[in-house]
Length: 201
Image (cartoon, rainbow, N blue to C red; front, side, top):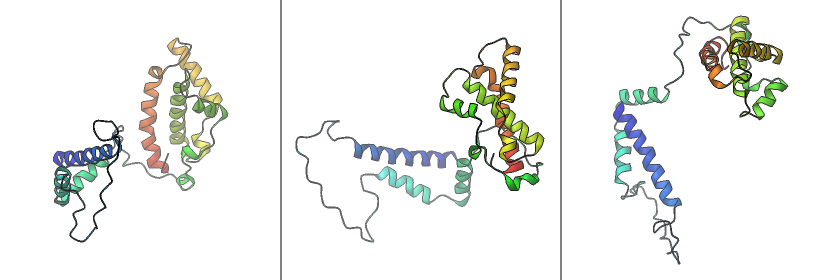
C-alpha cells in the first residue's frame, strides 16, 4: 500500500511540475525578446503516445498504476477514504424517526448572533462561541432525537448562558479557543453519532 500511495503522490507531483513548467517563462524566468513560433501539434493517431517521450518518469508511474492488482487498488481506495476524525463506534446506533425530515445544519437559518459571528470569525471570543454552539447543537440532537433545524439551531440565550458560566468557572472575561478545545473535540465526536442517527449533520 505504501508503494501505491507513493506512486500516486509522485504522479500528482509530476503533473504539478509539468503545469508549473508551462506557466513559468523559459530561460530562468526571463521572457525572450522574440518568441519562437510553436511547432504544429502532432496528429493524434491510434499509435500516438499520449505521454511525451521526455516524461518517462510519469509514464512509468502510470504504467505501475495500471499494473496494480485488485487488492492494491482496493487498499489505495480505502486509504483515500481514510477518516482522520475521532474513532466513534456507531454500529449500535439506529436511525431515528425524524431522520426522514433531516435538514443539514448548513442549510438551517442561523440566529442573528451566529450570523454576525460568522461574518467576523477572527474577533475575540467568536471561535469559542461557535465551539459552544456546535457542542450544544449536537448534544441537543442526541438528547431530543430531533434531526430538523429546530433541534440543531441553539437559541442565542442558551449559548450566551453557557458561555457566561464557562467564563465564570475559568475566571476569564474572554473565552479563547484553548478554553473550548474540549468542547470542540466533543462536538466532533458527537457529530458522528448525529450522522448515524439522522444522516448528514
